[in-house]
Amino acid sequence: MGSSRFKGYLMAVVGSMSYGLNPLFALPLYAVGVTPMSVLFYRYGFTVVMMAAMMVILRQSFHTTRRELVLALAMGLLFALSSICLFLSFTFMDAGIASVLLFTYPMFVALLSWLFFHERLTPVAFISFLIAFAGICCLHNTAGGKQSLVGVLLAIGSGLTYAVYIVGVNRSALRTMHTFSLTFYASLSGFVLFSMCCALGKGLTPLHGAMEWGNAVGLAFFPTIVSLLLVTRAIHIIGSTPAAIIGALEPITALAVSMLVFGGTITWLNGVGIVMVLLAVCLMMWKGR
Image (cartoon, rainbow, N blue to C red; front, side, top):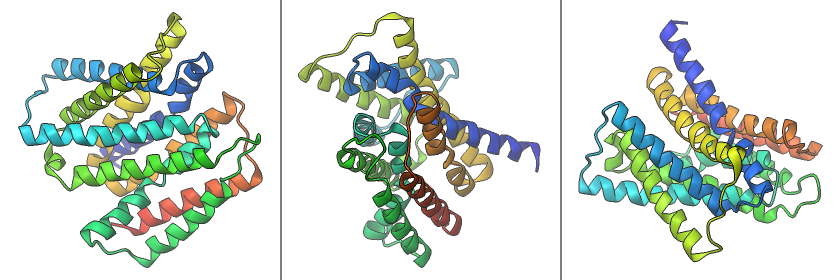
């Protein structure tokens, strides 16, 4: 394997594992009373600031056309909605299992492409849907007796809205928009949304101490900026399908964090469901384009 492709695979691994660190930074903030909306406010706020700083340092232009700007802000709202569903699901079920359900988004991408753009839905993809559905049924009842139906629906909703975001970006003028600019304006749109939610809701929960501020910054840096930039670069080097399959490390990392750091537990039926969901997604991507 050439050194360039090795770097590409390494970037995909590190980027995917970075995204799986969402629970590591979010759950400690929940534990001290920071609301999910406040957590997302800080995450998107720090993301906007850090992306702006990186663009200035790397001399990336903030200029964009009016059409691209409107589309980027609209897609940012979809991305923010996906984040809302995922972070709310953490309050109803094990965060690791919720991350596994989020990983159903590649199948939703295939389904949306088939429904709205008449792309061919292969028999393998159909079988993958059935396997994933059976796996999701196994994840319905989590250990600890939590009422997980709402959590399952929220996590799946996160995967669906993220799939709509991906399809929207790939099927619009945003397809050629620079990654830095798209990320900045999409994050800015989400930041405005969460600012409004905090203002109209229970208000913004303040952060106290270096630990809380560190978790908020870490949430913006590792699962957001590091993950996005490394995975995007990996796709350019090794291709989208290998990078997407390596993306299975995202929920696996989240599961490991949930169990090792926060003492999460799963039943044997949950374990079967997790394997089935991961198998279904990887099977579809392996046989897909």
